[in-house]
Length: 366
Image 1 (cartoon, rainbow, N blue to C red):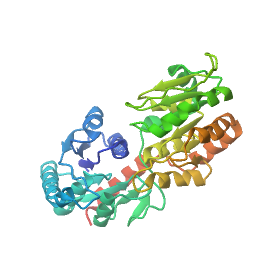
Image 2: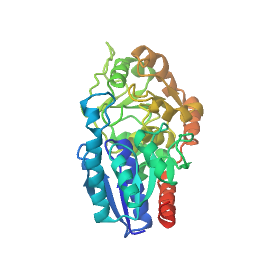
Image 3: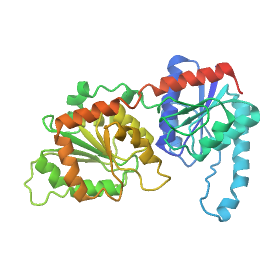
Image 4: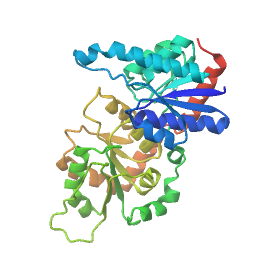
């Protein structure tokens, strides 16, 4: 195996496992030529070049959910994008194409089929997307992040995540982590994050409950997102209680996880894998749009006793005050939930997916 094309973009749910897999393969094969495929609209235009991998671009082909003119233009747009992807394959000549779903993967899958190039498909969510349902029809090499995902030939490898998270020993770096964020090492810490863009419901309900956390002796590390905000409502309580730290963005999530004793978060596949894998008890608040995949992502962890699942609509300040401070201050419960969570999620998915890719390269297209 000399050259790979990895296709995935749009969101961190596609780009993060792509980069983790690329790094795993480069560790095994330092001379391996890894090229990535994306579109001009996604997160990949910044994060993939920043990680040191070349990025090729094709035209995006979003699929309208409504019967309108935009939907009628889809076949022509897809034809253009597939032709662009085919030209890239002809120029790069990869041994294997690996797709992680999303808009860019459909033209990559169709181009690989057109040229007879070996294909590997990885599905990040518990509920497979349209792109990977298509791609899985073209190859016996299919990997999923969660057990029970309905794709043919699927083997559950888990979701590849960043090595700094997969190898994190929270206890050993906790002192560094709390100092990094200006927290008190003697107090329990709740980490709050709504994902890369933040979450208005989570931000508002947590900030409105700041007084309840202060009364319980809980400090809060609240990552609100680049455009989010949180003004903690402490009422008439005196200044000087437990810290409430607001950050718009944190690039050292390993330290955020190490500082935390529990987390409130969305339930994207990356988030579920990271927080459960490192043993953090979680309150999962799935994104209220989409096809329900976030709730399905969290379900194995919740069923094992590693987290709570609450809908976005039900995540009110009253619910937070009644539920979350008591969880964070209950050491025995937290520790039991953390053990349960870490037993569900594998942290070596990057190596398992690399194994499958090597197998595909050796076996060839079928």
